[in-house]
Length: 298
Image 1 (cartoon, rainbow, N blue to C red):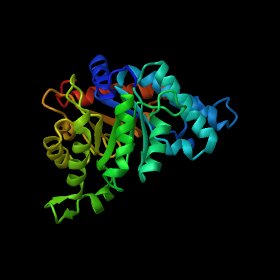
Image 2 (image 1 turned 90 degrees about the vertical axis):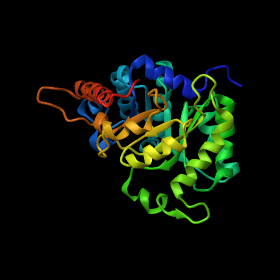
Image 3 (image 1 turned 120 degrees about the horizontal axis):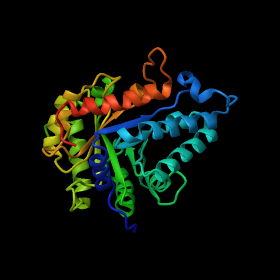
Image 4 (image 1 turned 45 degrees about the vertical axis):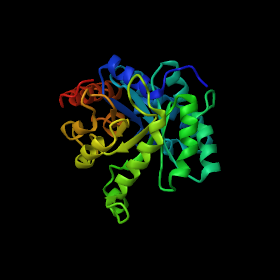
């Protein structure tokens, strides 16, 4: 058992220190990679992915409570991509920046345990502070993740109501036996799994929920149903979610959620005479200030 504080306690501390609700996604795409990253690297994919991620950590770090690398953009490049992912999370650890691995894993018990070992075991090459997971194989598929997270003081974010338009195809369907929708049934499962693992300091469990900024009504209802559950809120910025729309994600004291922005900060509009690094800093700072504009206490 590690002696460090629970992840969501540490994340709340980072939010207060940075006065920020912002989570910056790291989504490296070679077709959009800025010249500042590609120049002089002779198409060395590992070097470009690594430099891109580390530059985001360094530039946006003062404005972000945490970072969320999406592993698919690294896995697409095979071992070179995974080495870059490992290098970025190692640098984040050195800089003491909380890292959420956006891996969306989910499988039967023994396989789930292996996924949990890969990402949540202290000292592992792919160790992160928290991961996203998929609940659609049921509660027993989540148990190994919960056990591993609780033992190592890590965090989980379970997909509950996602930000993509197609999320409604399944998540909004009615459940006859309990008179609720699928996403509400998942929410109840998440709260039940997390209840035994609630921090005395923050009152937050180690099992969080992904709830999209593009579904503000769901955000409001789920916060009422899940008062002890930390939220990760994607869909702000490029997907159309607004600072005002995400206000219901937070508890009354302003705690309990971070809001992700990826494309708008990874690939900001570059003004005349401005380089990519300056544009990233401007975009990260603007996102932090915009979220404060919703009058949510940090």
